[in-house]
Amino acid sequence: MRFPSPQTLLIDADDTLWENNIYFDRAIADFISFLNHHEFTPQQVREKLNEVERESIRKHGYGLNGFIQALVDTFERISIEPLTPALRETIHGFAHTIAEHPIEIIPGVAETLAYLSPRHCLILVTKGDPLEQSGKLERSGLRQHFKSIEIVTEKDAPTYRTIIQKHNLHPPITWMVGNSPKSDINPALLAGLHAVFVPHDKTWILEHEELCQPPQSCRLLVLDRFAQLCENF
Picture (cartoon, rainbow, N blue to C red):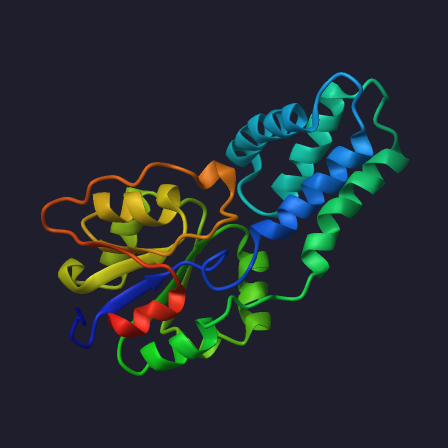
């Protein structure tokens, strides 16, 4: 089914438009290997880091600074060695490799946005550090396809309601497109929007959640690839 123009598409960024979590996973793997813990398995270290990251998000928000702090805190909690300035610098280095990595656009994204933007209203909705996220968008070369940019601290139902009000959106023709059930799909449906779920096999574990049943007035589409938006909009 193809929905008539114009619709409003709120579109996620990380792991929807470009790769993101794979670089965090690599940094975490390097950190675990460096830690080389003799009591905890790599899986146990990762579980501890997940726990610390949840705490860090509440204190520091999303982004590299919070991730760095989570690595440092995890080291301090489970390492026998004291955290020296040299060790701290090494840990920071794992995270800085993420910032230095070029933006890797997911296949089909650029062509799909070029097709959609003349036909529909596209608004980027991403969470995280404003400087980091705006910097990634500028380096991506995709900025021209979006009418507006929203960089928020959290993506929950109240946030989506605020965006609806700010941009005077009409929910019956407004969709949230993203890879995260927790941040993109479920809260958008709760806010009365339609949603398009585009799964990514490397979605951050803290974004995992069962898809909720859409309210009667809302639609939920599940696509295999971002490029399939062209078949529906």
